[in-house]
Length: 252
Image (cartoon, rainbow, N blue to C red; front, side):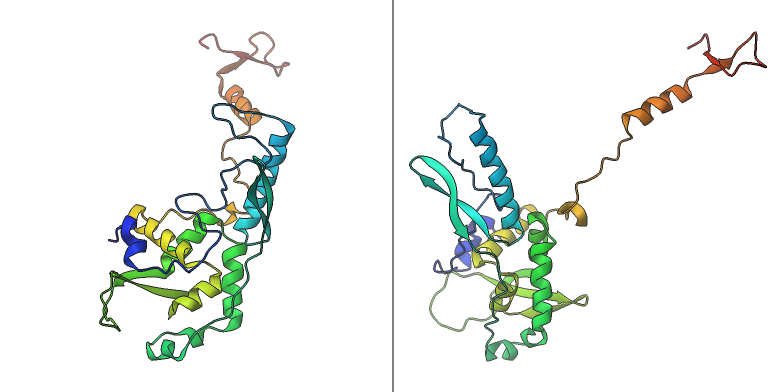
């Protein structure tokens, strides 16, 4: 079991690895700011500006989740506005070396067509929870078995990365994994740390990203109709042969 709090420190993550979209301990896509609104403690303002902000926030949140170009928030004269252009996610070139083959990794067995399929499926067909489940299932953490330098290191954990193709997992290098899914190093480490601490979250339905869930409850009209149908009833006592009317039983 990996200690979440010390995971990032233990693996010796280089701070030079940048992921501008990574935000620890928050829902991906949540900026937590307001657009063109003064932030005042204990005061809520429901104006047309608020509606415009929440509409823009919803749109940009979804665009970000789908890996598309979106607008980020920035503060201008005490107001928060969507002004920062964030580029869409792209399949990055692989940067594998000869060392991958020597270590038994299968980077060369993954075609560019397969990489494109991984990328499109990850960003087009999954919501954030599903992305985390997907990544957690393809990244393993173990102890460092071999050190290539005599210099003392605080790194206690080793990561293994896989890509799944035709129901078979292929171990690949970190560069191959991150470039294929267009993810930052810190994002992957944080997701994996959360999974080891809290467990892998339950996978949501496949249609959760594109179709709203349908209610399993009956419409009110059907409920009323069933209720009336089940009430104890009797035919007319005086004109039973000529009338189709029914009457409630006295016991009801």
